[in-house]
Amino acid sequence: MFGEHMKVEVLGPGCGRCREAFRVVQHVVEQEGLDVELVKDESIERMMALGLMATPGLAVNGKVVVSGRIPKAEEVRQLLGAA
Amino acid sequence: MRAGAEPLTAGALPGRPQAGRRRDLLLTAAVLAAGAAAYTQLQPLAGLLAYEIAGLPRGSHLGSAVEFFLYEVPKVLLLLTAVVFAVGILRSFLTPERARRLLAGRREVSGNVLAALVGSATPFCSCSAVPLFIGFVTAGVPLGVTLSFLIAAPMVNEVALVLLLGLFGWKVAALYVAAGLAIAVGAGWVIGRLRLERHVEAWVWQIDSGGGAADGQAKSWADRLADGRAAVRDIVGRVWPFVVIGIAAGAGIHGYVPMNFMAAFMGRDVWWAVPAAVVLGVPMYSNAAGIIPIVQALLGKGAALGTSLAFMMSVIALSLPEIIILRKVLRPPLIATFVAVVAAGILFVGYLFNLVI
Image (cartoon, rainbow over all chains, first blue to last red; front, side, top):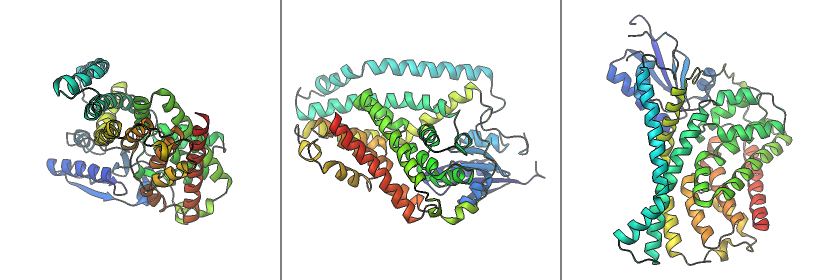
């Protein structure tokens, strides 16, 4: 697991729900002390490149795993392999 | 501990015991039954609280306002919870990605109708309008069909439906839904006919929209029930303050504004009332939850139904923030046409209902 570099992207144009989604993911990453690259991308281009049409979205290693909703902390923990 | 590279699905989380699922299912059923039982007792309970326990005199302004509030708030919140739960389950079948596949390459008219129907049933928040718009047009969904979707999505939704059902009854709710869908279909069709594609910002067409996101695949019924509960937490959690404030304002109007007070401004024979209602509605940004209880109270004070519907639709469907968001992808001539065509549709509906009902 340590050899792999995990990139976690939270996507959204910056509305309240997107900020909330970022907070949830950030909280999990900090709480679990995960060694991941966490970014918040607000660009439409990135959303389109990932094929994401509903925000907020969450992508792990370039693959969309959550779209159009705020994920729960427990779910994020599972998705990031920390549970 | 699992590595991050294994296939990730949002729904079926591994390791969840079967017994937990059964408990979830039973709990959901119990909550639904308790809610339904409570629903039937609301009217007597509200009266009891307002007149017997609080001791407000029957027939007083304050008494009727308080009774109205105590009855309508739990009623609408219960209905909202039930419908949002059901729609949340329905939506686990329908994602924007699936909607796009359904609509890509559709012809006009049938495409517009389908887009309006799908739009009213797809999860949507106005900050998703831009990625959704680009995702649609770059995948070959015609501009007019895309706009039918974008008009229907905020205008006809479960929150509006519940409030209309709860406060106005099913006839007005059905009228609103039919009129909203008709406007979405009509406006999208007109804009499609006008061939305004050149007024979409040029960079939009350069974007290569990827294969489509994969959230929400391979779901079990337990996952769908979980989706329903998540929708309740999300939507009811966000909307309830608007419902309470809206109904409180409605209760105030209900108790204190004299009968027929609104007839002079929003009555059926005031010809300028419909356009005034539409113009007034555009800068007002509220969701269905905040505005519908107020409009219901106004209707009780002599406002005409068509004028009230026009006001509601204008507030919900034509909002300044959404127009500003759409400006990122649409150039001013197309924005202006969009607003004008939708406003014309709302005007038509307003006059029609004032005339017919």
